[in-house]
Length: 211
Length: 211
Image 1 (cartoon, rainbow over the protein chains, first blue to last red):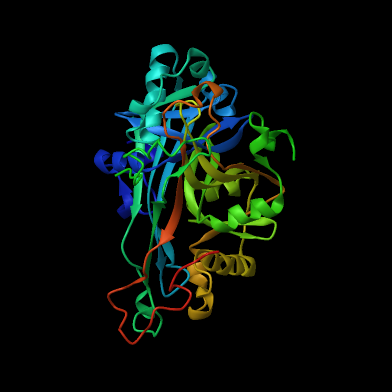
Image 2: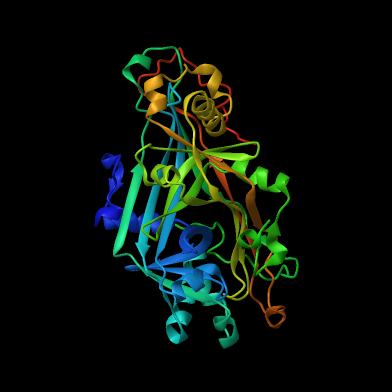
């Protein structure tokens, strides 16, 4: 971990355990990818998958992100999961519980077989179990999708969990404090209009669960 | 809306209706802010509030984000809400339903009364109703927090909703397609260990609801 990925202010929240980092990346659905154009930053949300020691980002070949990668411009990619609201006895200590990962590096655009395989991995990251039910992508479809590979060589995590860390002066005051847990939940799968009643909801969507 | 904030590839998903954009910003809890250091992008998650025509970002005065603003370096800030998984009959059309906003601009660090007021707004954005229950921040606390104001002058939104847009060749195949809705839900508020039973959970947390 080099200087850029060292947590400066809150070392107690820094995480460099790859198992923890991988679990955050595997639970997330959307990452935020930043790149530089004309000395200005641009950040966009995009779908992704983790495959071992790399992230695979999904985008349009004409997107600014793909163009940045094509010109070897560096990226910064964050995945953040919000786990709760920390309700402290002061505004200063009010916060959120979260788990986040930031990756820095220079991406690489995949092509051919590598891209095809990466697209499969992104589908499986989004909908585990889905790949067995759908056809192979056509060459035209693959060509219309950019997949960016970003190594996890330069990666760091941050985690905040637990209750408020109130100032001693506020303890014992008659003000409630604690945590409101937050989580992402999936509702019941809703069939498209043109799906007949003879086609059941696949087992991997009833319920949809990632972990 | 200038060239940078015009949606290039999928105009049908671009949104410039400020009411829609404001609703996305008001529902989000965490934004991803990108800035440039030594020609490289850095993206970090942070809490924020919207106040009229500006975002208020919360951070450490020593953070890279605050330093970037101090040197008039431009920012890009994204807020993304994931509403569902789009389960199409092909990998190519598989997607996510989402609402996102990206803001570009040069931030301004607030100080004094402006910062104090902004910190209050951030607490209220995180926990609507909370401000009436907690003490004023001390001068020391305010000094330890950076608040960055970013104008919404240059803002754009993107929304995807509804079912899969399958390729005609896949319609009528015996493969289920549809949407799995996703939403963030709050659990029951959990009191900190040092909160006695005589202190009830405040009404604004039972349940915690933002909208």
